[in-house]
Structure formats: C-alpha cells, structure tokens
Amino acid sequence: TNQPGSTNIKRGAIYTIDLSKPNQKPREVSPKTPERFNTQGMHLYTNPKTKKQTLFVGNANLEGPDTVEVFDVQPDGMLKFRKTIAHPGLANIDEVVGISDDQVYISLFSNQLGLLNVLKDMFFDLKGGEIWFHNGKETILQDGGIRFGNGVILTQDGKYVLMAETQGLNLRVY
Image (cartoon, rainbow, N blue to C red):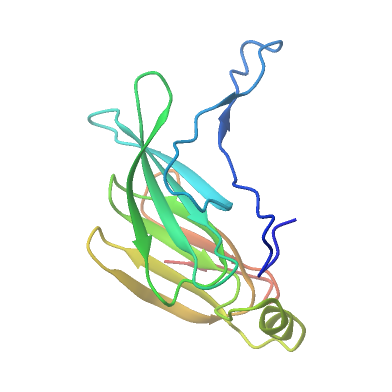
C-alpha cells in the first residue's frame, strides 16, 4: 500500500472502458507525467463549443500538499499532460469538478496534513473541510469550516457548485 515514507509506492493509473463492448478489456490511457501519481477524484470536462475534453485529476501526495493534474484528451483517447495545479493549502483532495478548460473547483475533506491530524479532524469535528477554486492562474480558498467535505459537483445547468458536508449532514451551494 502507499504509505508515507514507503519505498514501495505504486504509481496510479487511469483506464477507459467502452461500455458498449462488454468483452473489451480496460485500456490504460495514463501519460508518463507526472512521475508521482496517486489518483484521488477526477472530472472530465467537455467544452460545449469546441468539444475539447480536459481531465482534472486530484493527485494525493503522501508527503505533503496534494496537487491537481490537468490532461488534454487526445483524439485516440490517450491523455496528454498539460499542467500541475499546486498550492500549499491543498491537503487531502476529495473531489474536483472542472467548469472550463482551465478552471476547477477542488474539495478537501480535511485541511490537515498527516493521517493522525485527519483522524483528529474527523473524530473531534474540527471543521477542516474546504473548497478551493483555480481560475486558470491562481488557486483561491472559497470556503472553509466544512464538517468533512466529501464531494463536489456542478449542477446540470452549470449555475451552481454543490459540496456535500458529510458530518454536518448538509449540502452547501455556491
């Protein structure tokens, strides 16, 4: 398993499955970059005008803040690495949701680094969940004090972002 300090960390991968072909095996579409790749939440954004597809992937870092990896989907379905979104505040990414080719909301279930701190956040209800927004240039904290943020989605009409607050038994609307 992937544990902090482990020398036996396995690189994550992304696969596609054609559901119209039930006997077809999954096909790996992961690029070689980034080298450290531990997937945690992903969202496929399709530009309504150009039909260009962008895959946003949360990348869990066992030794520090997480990142969001941004990939362009190529015509053959393979992923081409575009960029990494990094910010020291991105601890414990739970889910991501792209709203354009370069913009993404990022939910954190806890803003605490380290397993022990995350467990404290969960059991002592420290309200460490957060939602961040990357506007294409900078990554900005949108809201905090969330009781175990667990998932973020965009409404079908694209007007609202919804975030589940698991321990708060609440659905936050932005």
